[in-house]
Length: 211
Image 1 (cartoon, helix red, strand yellow):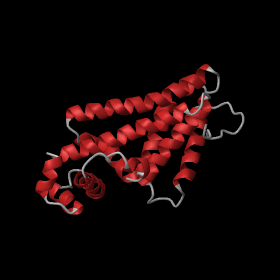
Image 2 (cartoon, helix red, strand yellow):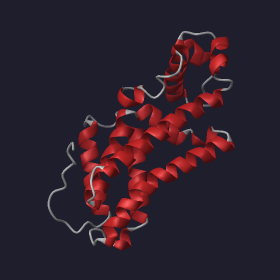
Image 3 (cartoon, helix red, strand yellow):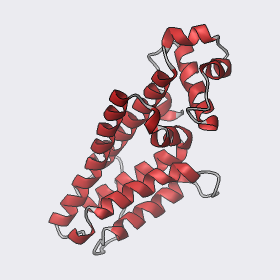
Image 4 (cartoon, one colour):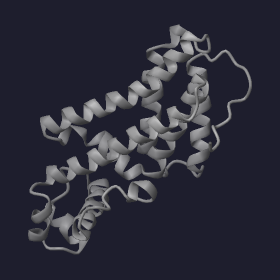
């Protein structure tokens, strides 16, 4: 992970960070059930014994990756929503952020979305709650748009579900099936989200600037 995502484990020992990044690579290539702890340790340049000092099980590695990815996603959508009081701008910013996240970090995004069932029940419930909180940020912006007459109430809640599904699915096919840059895809998807919600039109939506 790079950027803010790369800082998420900055407080961990270097060997633990190496193992987490190696796990993302190996699970991304072979899936959780096709990944062994020995393979993760080898990719990190460490012994299996060194791995168990930080992560007692392979599931714990998946949990730490999932937790980091979900918490970063929640932070992202909350910041996007807080950047404007206008519900149309908020929806546009939230979807833009979600799509860019799933494109720029497609490997970890695929892991947290599609290896979900491999988590232990308690960890899985924790991730479900974080997903609900992410969706709630979008839903509140959409509800505000309905109350102010900007969106069609008939488009909710199916529209919210469709938008979330579209943003998540980007991780499945990016970058293999396109040469478009993440910001181009994000803008197109954000515009599509407004159409899904039957936005009644108006001035072009501008991404909120600094300050």
